[in-house]
Image (tube, rainbow over all chains, first blue to last red; front, side):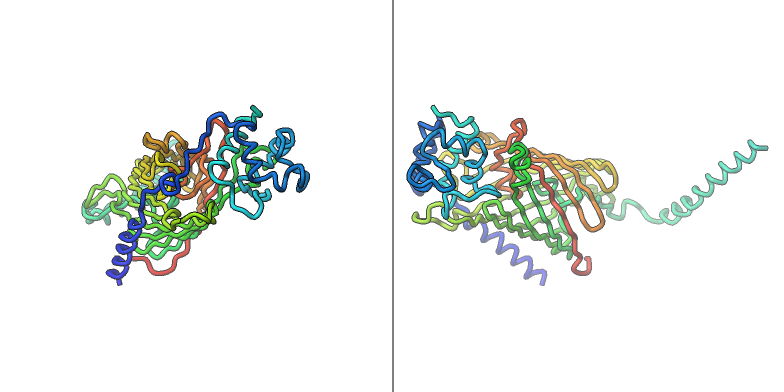
Length: 122
Length: 295
């Protein structure tokens, strides 16, 4: 019995590292490095919002009165903490973008950096 | 007269305590203390010091159920009730197959991560027949995150979900109250974002415990990332806490800058900075079940 147990453990230990690989998304999928320099509303964030959010929260449709098409309207959800909560899928907030996973890692990182830096416009 | 009575009381008290001790000495006189192993027990109270593993493993046939929780960052303000509105949880089981061998499984809500690990106690601190100054335990574990693919259209690989950790845990109980541990650690992450990011990460952990009463101790833990891209992008994990033992439970309450409760997370992905107030309050609760005869 002990031999069987020990053999099983050895097999598990031997198999586990077989799935060890050294991959990067950049190499596998050609993803460019995330440029985190000069993150402002005008330089980076407006484009992310336009691509992911404005279809439901813009001038045409503004669910729950939230809009992401202008800096002024954006600052409402920045200041009350909702933007950080919804994009990071924090407990107690709706998960955005709706019915999708979190934003791609780089876009999410840029939003968080922008919020950490006080959400500058320029 | 009073003086004589006082002297007699003192002498009687002395002999009252001294005589049984003399008997015990006579009994033990036949046993050579050099011929029996004198193991050091209870280097740490739990199988984790705070986030990281300790040299301890569950006893033979003991099953431990562990509930771990980290609230959100304290600096998220009153709106999030200083982090209490947010949190992550890990549920885990550890089972002692032998006195020197245990297996563990667990599941964390953070990135829906499953983990499985093995711990082998290679050396035990002892005096007597052998004089071994420290306890050494080896910990190896695999981790699988199971969140939905960020981009389902691309050719996603299952191996991209996996990461591993291996640690050599070396600890010594210096006095009845003070135990210290050093933990050289290796973490492997199968998929990283950039070519310049590290798949293989080395770190050295330091941990300690000081017992203030038999059932209460203060603990500290620090994981230092060796220089590299990971050390540039992430913070070293630093945690402080207390252990409280109550019957069959051990409560560990702590403050940490890492919200992760599994090795690749707290070693290689800690983002919180103490100076910026990124402090997470958390706890681990242990419940022990004895499932059979001890060896």
